[in-house]
Image (cartoon, rainbow, N blue to C red):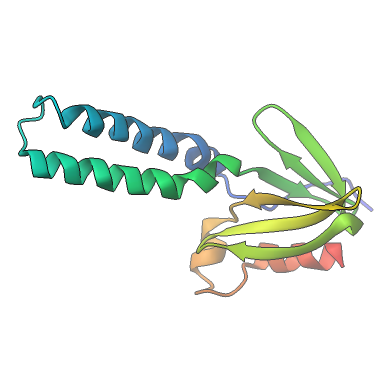
Length: 145
């Protein structure tokens, strides 16, 4: 048995967790401020449409706040957030399931309660498989059974 960790989540997790929601949040503020104040020199209907478009995208960005980095080895799954790290025994993992189009959730048992961890797998594993499970997830499921 080795302690070598395999990475289950994408390298772009930081980008999707922090930068994309920040961009749409700032655009929501800018387009919201542009409705009463005409500093973008646009018609009022265009300004309202831009605001509504940004608002809808901000709603879709809410799940991204819960993204985590996920690593695993033969015995443990390591979940790393921005500040803290949590280790879960692989025998506590109940299942791995797709969430929305691209993300995956790990369901695990924590003192009798079922909890979830949201992560984003490697991009090449998702888009190259055309809707099938990425190889990294299939390999991970062998460790948790």
